[in-house]
Image (cartoon, rainbow, N blue to C red; front, side, top):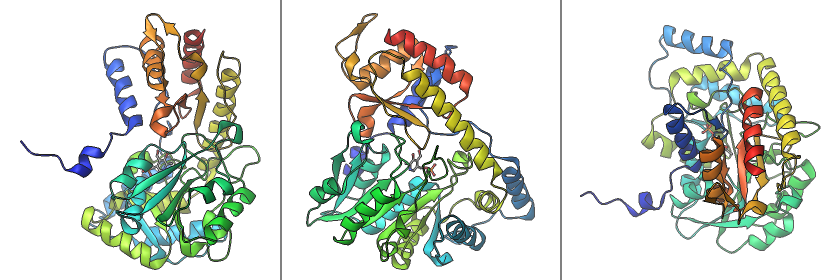
Length: 395
Ligand SMILES: Cc1ncc(COP(=O)(O)O)c(C=O)c1O
């Protein structure tokens, strides 16, 4: 028998991918499932991006690229930050990886280890805790409240600091809550950070998906000196409907980006050459597609929250970003629905899947028992159908 390492034994499978797999298994049995578990846009990657990939293949871009990414894509990323935020970085400060998740792994591997603490505002994206744990560092969760739209205050951050604190993981717009920190709120956090030795991993993967008057902010640009402390993470998965292409990036101080690049060069060599060419077309091409998808997500958000507001026993706020509804279902705990006891977010989700064929993810996976996450990155027809079922289930 081959013994499993301590590190691997401690890693949990991604709860969202596991929930997606459960729904797929039911679909394979011919059951119509309303699957709201996965955080991926349902749109086809725009045509000019797909065409760029075909061109890249045909011209022979089918070999290893430099470990840190092609010069073309790294330059396109520098233009992206200049254009969107007036943030000037050199191509050497950019590392292209196999999705933003891989960028986060590289950042953690290059900056923290045993004895270090990583601060994670909660609810948090499922992978953060496991990715930290894989480095041997420990994480400190900072619970936030629905009443505050799940935002961490400077006081909460200050209270979480210890002599071992090394890194803060920020995520705005947030998965799972959709919460978007305003510029002044981020500036107040930046002041606490600049007063401490803390570095920041700012995961800005949903930066293009903000609604109403909300604006995405590039954290590194907020205060002088902050860029030297901040690793900015983003990618093409969510903004350009490119989850399967696996392109993400990190931007940060040169020594950290170099160390991350060394880790990556030994792990995966480089990201896919064809996907990198497609990502250049995404960043440098016409941005109308991004705005069209953003508008559709905003319409779906309004649809979903209009429906949730009339359902019994739910508590929520209407988020300004990403494509998730994260709502409190705890008033239903203690009920038994068609023989199924609802005691926590997991049993709620299992009952909703089995009885209503609606697949949502338990809040426990995001460090927030009592809540569930519904992804609205799916068509309005699917959302209407699934929300009808959810309403019947709750009533
Ligand atoms: C907050 C957050 N960060 C990072 C990622 C990873 O995205 P990618 O597909 O680029 O690995 C996701 C994907 O769900 C996410 O929700």
